[in-house]
Image (tube, rainbow, N blue to C red; front, side, top):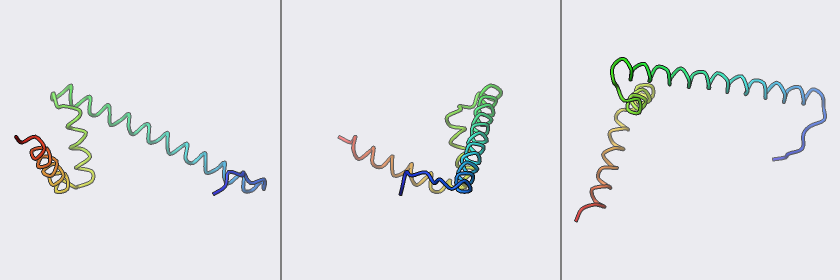
Length: 86
């Protein structure tokens, strides 16, 4: 890996285009995060649903990984109980 910036104008243009594309992508990500925050706030306001838990539910729903979530929570519970017995 190098930190030397190319001097070829075409290479510089391609690098700048890549930076612009990344910046645009980051702007879209920021907007989507804000939308998610607004939706969670509305769910909380309208239905008194905890934002923290609804965010987790949304992530599970998106990833379709409820089985993994249950397994992980079971393992965490088992470890916790093993450590705190006595």
